[in-house]
Length: 441
Image (cartoon, rainbow, N blue to C red; front, side, top):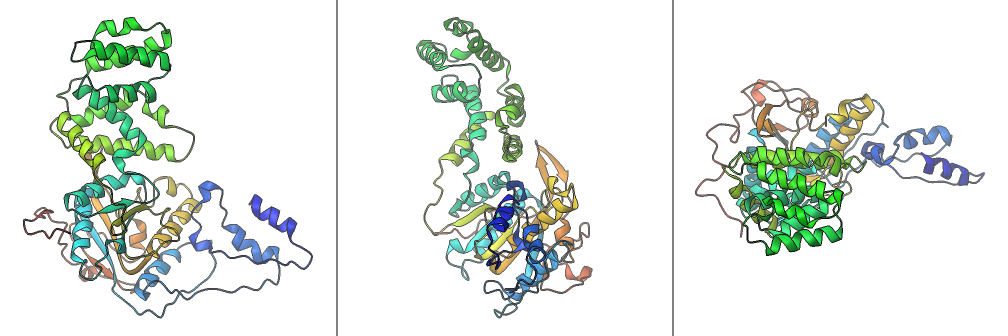
């Protein structure tokens, strides 16, 4: 709004000004963007000539029809009717999966099944509402040898808050892991300066104990009371934690003991997403029988080669996808509370921005568009039931209890139960890794 006021002050008497914009794609209100600047332009500059660019040169009419059907539910918007000369194309497909792991496996298998029609993996994009959703797709792609890259972010196990918690887990598994200890001293514990860090690392290195940080004499090398208090917290935690506890519970105890909510809170909206990453970390860890196996797997995931070459699937948030295009797009996690996000349902204005975000994501697709949701999601190791996103409902999708499955949306306004086929991927007998699974080479 400030920029718009400045522009109005700079315009000459002839009102010599031209602007380009699309209020349907305004998705950055949390950065100060105000799409009403576009809506108010004709009022502020009476007689302005408006040219609507309604022809779309990217997407098929099935994709455009579905996108417009959703955005039409916004009350505050300009009027446009999109059209294309690219033909109807394949219908938009909606798929319900039992849980987020099956959702990821479905996407991975679908990519492998479509590779004859789209041989370049860079033709595929997986879009999600939050970065925390990437891990399950990263794991599925690694398991199925599908190269991928994350755009606008880093891989799950390379995110700072995740690496910080993993450092504590590494120290629990291996008490002489000096790399992990140094990271803990520098990133997690407050009041520990460079001098104290040097003393602790030197003392821990020369001690013969397999777990030097659990020995009482480790505290004797410190003169600073602040450093001593922080090291004492780590010392007591390591002595009290049981390495044979459920790994997910250990992650939760690390997050709580060292107050990661405060550590990750930098006053920006991304702070909540960092805590969500740690929630996903705990949920993932809870699936392992012991901490050592989880730490080993996490290390393998972190060191795996993320494809930097062009021939790889793109993973990114919906916000990061703005301005891009891909022949095949998967929008995943389309559930109430996730997309639209719980924060995006506080006010009508928030919900309309979430709907604009859905429109942006859907119009990234050129040829094929898949929308998926999981009927259950794990949160801190426990499953919770979910409901399909209202955006799917606005396409005519109905949640028919157990009778859910694939739905091809080709632009029709009404559906009945006969539109729902039996899902190939939603049943309890679904095997995500059949023996004859084709491997991408």
